[in-house]
Image (cartoon, rainbow, N blue to C red):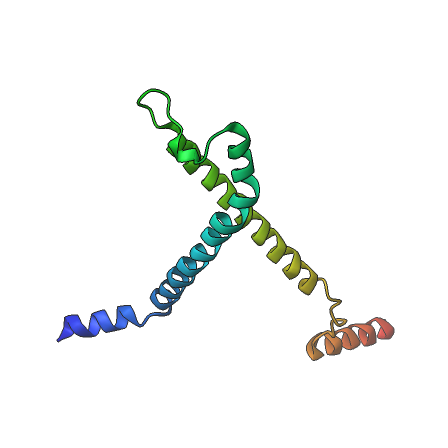
Length: 127
């Protein structure tokens, strides 16, 4: 019974729950980025370049028995995904920066500091 209690305590810790939520959201976000790359960016940028070079599919490019097209496809896909994520994170950081730059209210010193300053001023006057 002790092992079950320990497992429950471990599974219900905030870190484990936060990690699980992060993994699930990361998977969903990965699907969004993959769709953006496969369905929007690739048809707009890569397909016209392939057609201009006379190739229908980059993965079909070979040199002898070496299928370098698959390797090129993986590299291009990685670079596009990295660039899209960079753009998204840059936009999010810019939005956060605008939030933080809102003017802060003037700081009011704590009552103790005001009282100590008054005592200091009174002691200076007595001398």
